Image 1 (cartoon, helix red, strand yellow):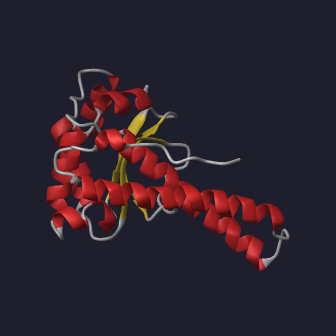
Image 2: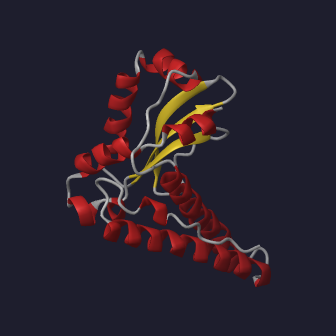
Length: 188
């Protein structure tokens, strides 16, 4: 098994995201891909049940989630953004929050909470519900069995070189860059 970093250079020119910020973010993502491969390979040659093996097992989830969350994040953005549309996702959002505007307020509020991590719109296929949730770092806060349909990175590396401490301005730029076609496809 060997994961390869995906190319997200088509995002260069994204409004609110300098190419330098994106290059740095892509490099960081590439590190997660590299480390996912390294940890996986190290697990093959480490004695099962040892403290070293246990730490590698824990580390694998961290690196793998860092890789996948970044892929989902970059994949749900595009240069001109797009609109949600009137499909099933909108209907569910209206049901849960009363309106898409109320959903957006809740999602943005999650993003402005103190701390580092990820804000995710997750879909529960059992109850056919959606939730805005916080994933702390990469490995705590995932809703078991839920499908991640919209992912926003709120680690400092995602915005600080372009926005300083103005996370709310970064979140606004992200909201304008959402590729709702991708989000709707993940939902369906």
